[in-house]
Image (tube, rainbow, N blue to C red):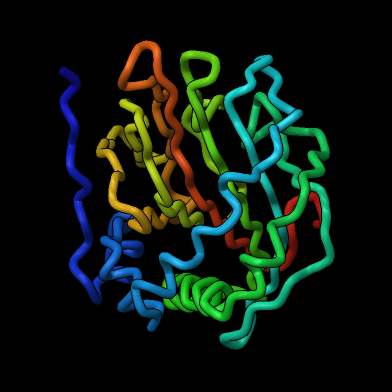
Length: 247
């Protein structure tokens, strides 16, 4: 039986200090609600559209295990607004597997983006980022991911341990169903220090200073050898000044 390391949850109210001191923070669902000022039910109500994600047609490893949507937003002055739809782009310096190409995905569903809790959540994460390092407006890319086991194995981070080329990254665990694996690993970009744990609670959050740490998630497999499972996440990246590829 695989050993599961529980998340090292950051004490509520110390998220900024953890980001400053360690380069990352891990928030329990209750802490996410507290720092965003949202009711837990409102956050849970954001679980919209994961069952209708289209396949990711850009996987260079030939896999069929990833489904995805992507939209862009601007966060400034405590407000979040939808930006014109654009392709997702990363340089090969940050993504050796998929860097250097424009990947145009279908946008997030209107039913998700129209919810008041959505813009409030984006703005709350922006306030946390601004409390650690001055920046703005924050150029936010939002990714809905479903990694499944249709190929027998699913890879949440096929590019391996990486940085995203932004200022901050927020990874929300939305759901895990019928899987094992999917361990989160965070490494100091400038040294040997590393941490490993498994996010399991819906709407728990890993918040990263992308300039200081490298991260990855290990592959997933079905619990039942003849079964299927999936891992759903919401990933928000915050970059000051411009979207990647614009500057």
